[in-house]
Image (cartoon, rainbow, N blue to C red; front, side):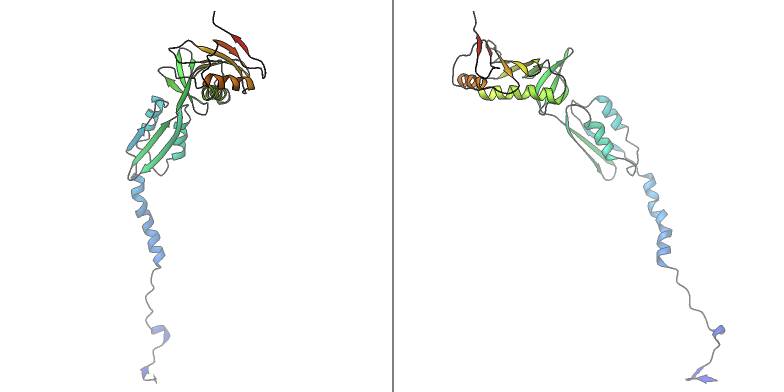
Length: 235
């Protein structure tokens, strides 16, 4: 029996078309092979550009990262490890292919100093205590607690006296909260001592303007009162 010129073949005797294996299944089979090299990926070099504020022990700890997997390394934790130290203004951490970790610590700008025991420590621009330094940096702050608020007050008083009088400030001492004593003048000149309040008074502003204009200051002057100046001249 023929249909349309072709012999009739029962359904059970017809050849079945070959089934194609789904392509996505083949790709899944390759995934373990593709990720196999990552298991051997390790950091083989740590470059540290440090600053004096970072202790040697931290650099040794950073060197211990060699051999760790980049896939499990938390760069933020490395950054926090370094920037937690006083005197560090900022830290950049970057991983460079194929296997180098770079850590750079930027030191704070030292704008003053304070004695700590027999040593000197710097004071950063915001009043934060910084790292140990070899020699004092003016202005030297005395009698302040090692907090950014108190040290910041000492720096602010020194800055306003310098700007107002055009004289360098060597030292600022906190006698009592809100009551300060500053030593002005170059180191090769006799010291000029002024007693000031935390906030500038009218007498302080007038005194600074007169000294900046060339008036010779007394050796000791109390400028804390708004309308009264107490002067002690040299014998």
